[in-house]
Image (cartoon, rainbow, N blue to C red):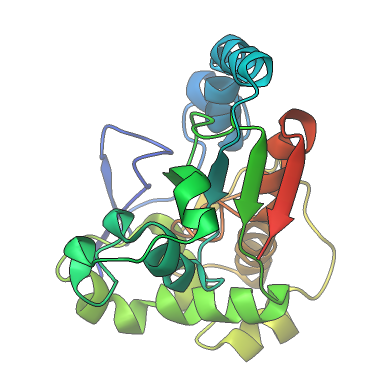
Length: 243
């Protein structure tokens, strides 16, 4: 596992593997696909779904339909909320997806759920609900959850992502990431990220800033952050609830 890494499927769906010890690889290795910034791929998908979203919103508003979409933000207590609102969407609930639930007012109205989203699913409802947490606590939880030391227990023998390899090899603790990784000048978000075995301090700091800001994928939870989940809803929803 130490020899290879890959980019997450939402960044590059051909599952190309890179040998860490041989050569230097760029996160956005294809200019045509990445356009200088990997998030452009996700953003392009949202633009393509814009017409469908507008059509569905008009339908809901014209019929007076009252329904809620739950946008599950990772590492912010969302799994616990899902178990009490829509347990069929989570295998983490006690009793699994077959758990019986006495419907509450909010569970009766919640008809759409999304955890990771790049297609703007669920944003057509007039009311959106999202779980929140102290952002520093959330990032600490994300860091430990996806750390390489926990990889085997959580993910088995799956190949680690190049972002996981770079970030957690550069910074063995959350303290080091915050104290040393975020020191110095913040790199521009369009600067290409490098994947190397013995990365310099400059390259490591670039990964630290990009991961914390969610502009590059260390894995998943750091990318689908508040900005990514809430920003579309500020322009589409009639009401936004936080939990």
